[in-house]
Image 1 (cartoon, rainbow, N blue to C red):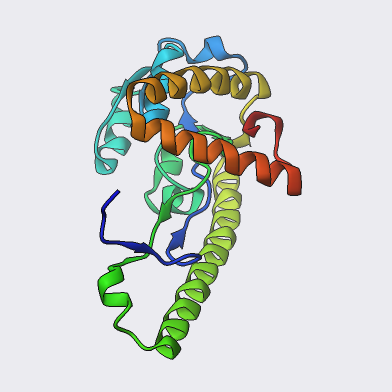
Image 2 (spheres, one colour; image 1 turned 90 degrees about the horizontal axis):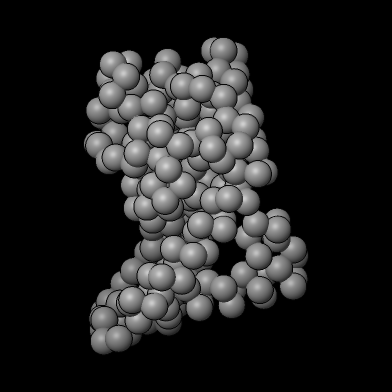
Length: 214
């Protein structure tokens, strides 16, 4: 597409799944989402809005007070470790886990090919190895931190549980419709979606995916 950038394959920062959401009430069926005012963002927020959620965006720093004052009833924010560090255990008794809304947060490590090609081959190998090693270290640390944070949420008194499968199914159904609409409107979205679907098929053939991810 003409961009002067090279993806450092295997490098970058590969985050863990975000918490699906923190809620002030228990969720059992998709209808329980209807009417909730929820801090959301991006495509996930648009999909939840189609499911009846009053989707609003606000900066992370405003979530705590907005929940305390009843401005919002629920929120999605980040990973368990981050949400614990922000003190969000004090608002939103129910912590629902599911990777489907935000399975990862990925920040690519990009370099300019015009600069990259000026490096000697031995230095290229060193940079690539360091990039991949740092990506692996970072991801492993996040996994451990998330596990510890979820235990802290539970110890505090939060109710930590998986998002009910019936809500996952409803979210995926609406997400598929939404993404098809975006692909029909934007050629770039169509290209990305087709690439992701193709990758999912390869991954599923090799190692298997949960039903909602297929």
